[in-house]
Length: 314
Image (tube, rainbow, N blue to C red; front, side):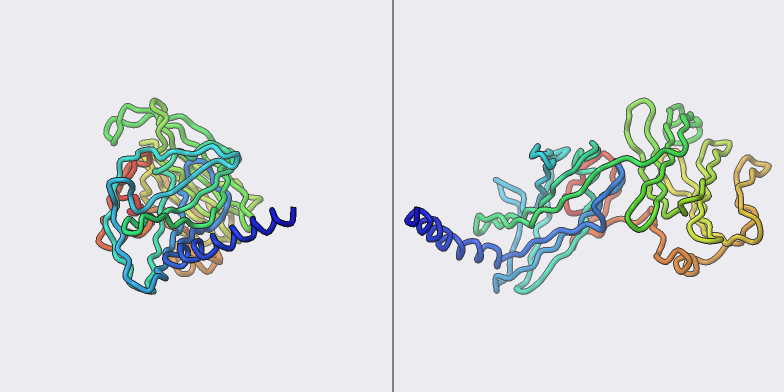
């Protein structure tokens, strides 16, 4: 027994220098802002890679493997394959001591809408040394919110996707430090998800107001803080048409339909974005924000279920 333990320790001792050298050449890490997400919402993972080899590191796709990718599996060990394996990454050079840091949206890249827990790692392949550098694993959970409003509407023929059907769902989701309001729009014929927007915080005792105008576009007024309200105007294909913050004047603000069938906020005064950020205690999320691209990469808008040609571009 003593000989067996000594043999195991000796084997580990031999392996340790190899593992340390591999980690020292390129240190890869991943992080998420939170661990709980609504199904289909953008799941932005931050990846950093620091070159500790002492020399410039040139990373490029090889015939056997791309230089960058993810490994995702469920918590019970089932691998989650990418939506498409046909992608390429632009070559990149990391100088000695240099670091790259990028944000990638996993939602359009992997089918992770099923409820449950997942484990993700980032892999970087150094073709010159034929070696993989892998980040420590990170776990996250996909869940569903509490529905507040559901409606099925048609798309007017004068709009993109005219003649189609949309399922609109407004829901709340409780996070550790706040309750968030979400809007999901789904194609009634194909099941495609046009958006799963996180509209921002909502006070726990409030019921947001939601109205559909003459073109079935969505108007939402939510209470984000005492006497502060956020108005969102969103199209049937998930496009954000307007977002404004208001301050209550006397009674609770509301949405009022105009003569042309649209809606406007009444009983409140418009306030500037900087003041809105102070009231909300944090900047309100911008639905048009996209993760940054790699150097010399292009940020090309993609459908929600498409995989970008460059994995690191989203």
